[in-house]
Length: 209
Image 1: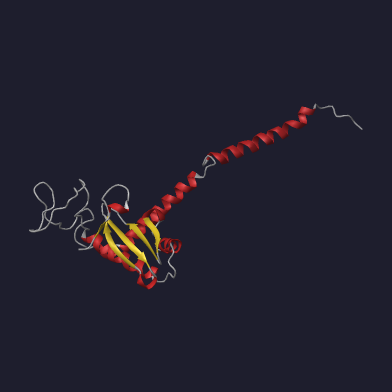
Image 2: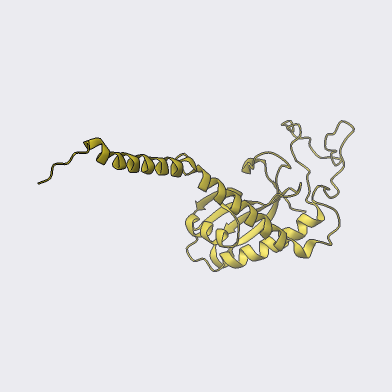
């Protein structure tokens, strides 16, 4: 057998080069999201937000000619000189102070009122087809209509029904919906949310006008 004259290092070098190249590829692959998956989650969230905005515009299309804008509330009840609500003669004044800035008399704009009707019709129709309306089933049904999870609040079982709220605020509006999923007896009514800030169920007002 002819002896090999070349040093062992001459034959092992390509193996080290390949190993270094493989390490470089793995390093580049991991740089995209630092191995945490945050990039993919952020992209998905942005995509859902965009789809939600498109859905809101589509639902509100019949309301494009509604008078007033989302940032212009309808007429409110009269208030006193210090910004306090005027009382009807003979009415007992409230015993608890009204929180400064609380939307106690806020009303929806004409556009929001119109949009609320559109949302109520499509949501009620979908919920009427849900038998045994558990929170999971209601959430799935609302998602199918384009309402994303971060705009669905207070989703909880209450006996045989499931209650929830939809945050539909956009373009300065204050529209929200309070829903009750109960099969054929499902119902959705408009409510008023704070113009800015996070969505808090305890700060909502029923729009009973």
